[in-house]
Image (cartoon, rainbow, N blue to C red):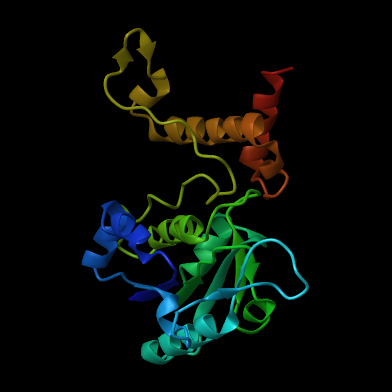
Length: 247
């Protein structure tokens, strides 16, 4: 079972997300355990303050090291694990992607630090953290939403969480390409028809169509991805055919 600890000043934000859909089913299946902790509880002052003015002046408040250091130490001790991946959610972190999700899904213990205010005391970043992650080139009011995004993408990769173990293997980005189009009943919806090949029952032709359409979608929407993967000879042939259609 994977253990996920989340340090947040607003733990109530996670209740709805973790109590629904796949994230909730993952708990029922024994694949993951969530533990949301308010690190204000670890503050060593009578007012339970966790932030202070930055040295050198400037706008905003900075999270103090003491509450977070003590919280991380306590959670590691309770988990009996010194090998937790400690993830700091911050705009300066490396961009999160599917490859990182797959990497994190192999871990036994993930610990997320969700900040607020102007930033973190640098000693938190330098001493406690194993990974600094950003979910995009924009700034949020806190790390909670970023943590939810990462947790969702990781949990669905855990064994037996999804009903079909192959579901995530062909997801967009898992293969290096965007996923091919999908269709379901009815075959003719208000004059909009499903491609004939998908109704043919010929699985070889269907897989070829899906492979070619994945290349087409990636070429048109994210051509940068194609340069990052090693295409098979068959994919190279399909790519040439797709490009000719737009010449």
